[in-house]
Length: 81
Image (cartoon, rainbow, N blue to C red; front, side, top):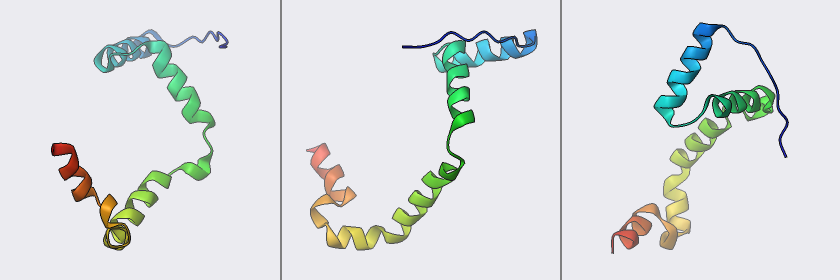
């Protein structure tokens, strides 16, 4: 279920939203919905993806050694076959 919310934005902002929505193949409503989700996101999650990427990069060799059958190069090779 969803609720309808009406907002007013300046014409130039609406034009920018329309341009971006068209460029991304989405709608103005979807862009605004995503912005609203971002506005209420838990601030503790900010930067979490980068911390995870850094952790994986720093520990990739250890993971590959511990789980050789799941190493990305092996997975990539099996997909190519």
